[in-house]
Every structure is written in structure tokens, then in C-alpha cells.
Image (tube, rainbow, N blue to C red; front, side, top):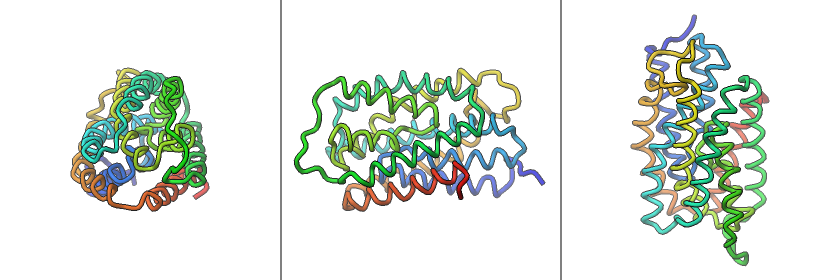
Length: 272
């Protein structure tokens, strides 16, 4: 028997997912799309929706939720002096353009390809992050703006392609190639998401406009019912996550980040 969007289970799963993603967003400076997208993908298929449309709706809706979460989380990290604004602006502006392009590419790829790419990218990011110290002691943060432009393009493209704010790609990039410490990477990642999630959301709206087979209350590939159910609990939880994140040992933050990434990556590839 197919589930419907009015079923209590549908509502309950999305509300819980939104709250959990909000906490993770605040704690780790990531959008939570790598949690919200797989859950929505499963739920939308349970309603009988075509898998190719379901994954695009899941990715687009997740990005639109991330846009709101990123505003709250960035404010918190800014107050704690954990946002490097010049790198964030450079990577954010270049990333927003690339995110729009990534969303356009995603609108032409089948669900199986997207979910596999999603899983592989996240697992690679997790492994690279695990081998990088959470606190840098000797290496100086890069000052060459070219690194930030290319970093933003890379983060933004995968943000739009995979419906993530970019943190699961951006934090490894900042730790490994730009020599940020974990706390600065988390705070700056949150600021970059303001740009990447906006560009990606616009891409999913325009590329999904008028698409047949989408559920009611859809704005292109963004489903507004799912968005409300995810964003409200997410907003309430994101502030708490950001406050806790500033107090937790950066090495613990890194390990939590890696474990979550590996689990979701394996799930999307179909290993678990």
C-alpha cells in the first residue's frame, strides 16, 4: 500500500529528520542535505513517485531548507568569531554560480547515477577528513585567492548536483587544501552555504518548472510541503547545535562528521 503525504508517518519522519538535520547543521557547519535528501528520496518513492523525479525533488527541497538553516547557523558562528568572511565571500560567490550549474546537470541524470555519485563523493570526503588533523598548528591558511575561487566552484557544483549545502565537500577542501582548522572550517562553511544553497535552489526551481508528475505544492523541483515540515523543526534545532558545536572538542566534531558521512554514503550507494 502506497504512503500519502497526509499520512502521520510521512509527517513524523520529516519532522524528526528536519530536527536532526538542524542539530547537525549547527554542530558541524553543514547543511544537513546528506541526511534530508536520502530520507525524502525514500518517502517520495513510497508515495508512488517516479524515482528520477523523486531524487530531484529530494535534492532541490533539501537545498531550500539548507538556505534557511544556514542563515541561523552563520549568525551563531559569526558571533563566536569562527567565520572567515573574505574566503567565505570568494568561495560563496563562485560557488553559487557553480551550484546553479550543478542543479541543471542533476535535472538530466537518472536517480541511480545521482545516488551513486552522492555516496561516492561523501565517502571520499569522509576518508580525507579523517586523515586530516582537526586543529592545525603549523600550516598557515592560504592567502592566494585563486585557491578560493576554484574551491568555491568545486564546492558549489557538487552542492547543486547533490542537493547539499556544500559542507560535506567544503569542510574537507578547507581542512586539506586551504589549511583551515576545524572550527574555522565549520563556521566558514556555514557562510558559504548561504550562497551555494541559494544558487542551487534557483536551479532546481527553474529546471523543474512545469515538470509533469511532481506532487502538489511543488515549486519546480522544490516541494513546499516537505520544506515546511523540515525547515520549522530545523530552525529550532540549528541554534542549539551551533551553541554546542562551539563548546565541543574539534577532534570529536571531526569524528562525528566522518561517521555520519560514511553511513549515509554507503546507504546511497546501496551497500547498506
